[in-house]
Amino acid sequence: MSCLKGLLTSCLVLASVMSWAKAVPISLDKTKVKLPEETAKEPPQSVDTGLHYDRYLREVIDFLEKDQHFREKLHNTDMEDIKQGKLAKELDFVSHHVRTKLDELKRQEVSRLRTLIKAKQDIEGGNDIAVDHQALLKQFEYLNHMNPHTFEVEDLDRLIKSATNDLENYDKERHEEFKRYEMMKEHERREHLKTLDEEDRRKEEEHYEEMKKKHADHPKVNHPGSKNQLKEVWEEADGLDPEDFDPKTFFNLHDSNGDGFFDEQELEALFTKELEKIYDPTNEEDDMVEMEEERLRMREHVMNEVDTNKDRLVSLDEFLVATKKKEFLEPDSWETLEQNQAYTDEEMREFEEHLVRQEEDLNQKASDLQKQREDLERQQEQLNAQKIELQQAVEHMERLKTQNVPSPPETHFEGNAVPESLGHDQPPEHQPLPPGHQQQQHHDVPPNQQDLGQEHKNIPQENQPLPPGHNSPPQDSPKMPLDHNNVP
Image (cartoon, rainbow, N blue to C red; front, side, top):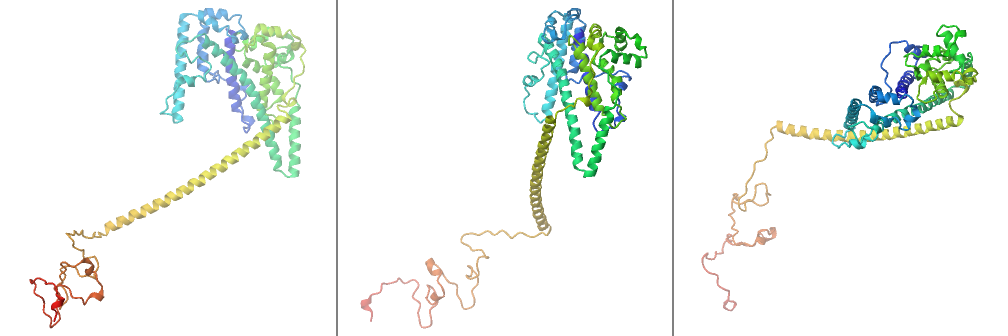
């Protein structure tokens, strides 16, 4: 079971390293930073691995440890066999009780993932969109999403491989992150120098070189995991006579949890005395972020030399074998970080070019956002103007209502009656005429004669009074045709 336990322990170390890295930003006062050896003296707390499937991983391993058959198969299994899937095949032989519990754990995990996916969809505004859980679950490689009900061999294989890969990738990502940190620190120093005049720039450069020299001026650092390094811990940390150094006793003294293995965290604790030779949190020239990178470099080096089965644990047997090697008795000198720059000149040049491109992109985005803001402001002004016009129109209507202005009476016209408002040049029908005028009859008068102008006023109309000396023809006598031959 040491392999699975080593896997879980490595996850715990990963979590502690991640927590430490997040706890030491560049701008913090290094004198107030709590170092890992200080936190080790505090009461133990439940540490999260940092993996999003931390709880699922823990519970699966805990239940597998309870199966006797599985423990026996793991006795001589190394991490390479586990990576190749040989361990997962033994799942078919575990007890029914354990398999039932593993099925339940998987169903709970799938349900948890589906809930998270649905919550994410809701937050992103996709409430009305049907969620394809099977498609989304594909991104979670540590379980077989096609079978959400039972824990099978493939599930254990996926879980182990995913956790192992995540840890290995973390080491690579950690080195890259530290490299970016160092390059950014150098970039900011160079940018600061550009803001200074020649005299201040010279002083700043001199101060920088002085700090580098002070940091490099430290006692010799022993090779991590060597006899000299462990004897120093034996003498200064354990208070024992260096002449009585015994590897087996040393191992038992520093196996903090007494499980028969050095895990990564227990190994890192062995390097504290060496790191104190190089780094002091009260010194301006010492960077605590660099100290943690140095610590992890030491741990990786010892693991590569001593952890022969690559289970991320150092057993007592592995430790005792390593103490008999030449590298343990006569090691090479250890090169610290100041002797090994984290980046090359080419990497620094590419990094600064990348920063320039990022700045240009940000400036372009800022310009685009400014234009969008101006467009929105213009649209808002137009809307405000329209709002004012509408308000004025409403106020005008309200004033008319409050003044009680009567509406014009509604006029109904019958037949061919003409409204009074239509013209005053022609007297309306039935309107009294001036004295001396008689009501004109318009019967049988062609329409074109009614509209004649002033030049036709002397034309006698039918029923119009005749001048003196003229007799009006009888009204009822018939009209006779005129005979021109009988005219006298």
